[in-house]
Amino acid sequence: VELEDPVENIGAKLVRQAAAKTNDLAGDGTTTSVVLAQGIIAEGVKVVAAGANPVLITRGIEKTTKGLVSELKGMSKEVEDSELVDVAAVSAGNNYEIGNMIAEAMSKVGR
Picture 1: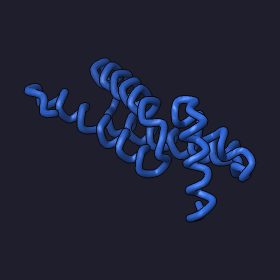
Picture 2: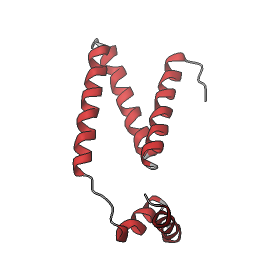
Picture 3: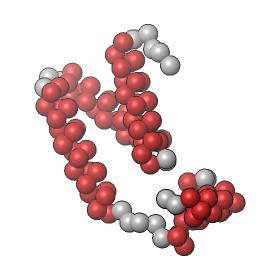
């Protein structure tokens, strides 16, 4: 998708990149990453328009992102094999048939 407004086009590309990276790294969560990216971009534009230094805003976002990622990693836990069907089913829209297929495939090929 290409937008006529160059600023909007940059924003759209950032959101696409966020979704693609989330999909590549996690395989899920693209909607969440798009909503978060949109919020960060919208608020960033507001504070820059109000006179904030865009370089400092960018550094703050990067620092906060690193802190959040570290915190989330600390909160995360390995999924046990017995939980894999449930996790896969939730990711498949609560479809346990697909969840079972995913869990079976993962047990055969590994994680």
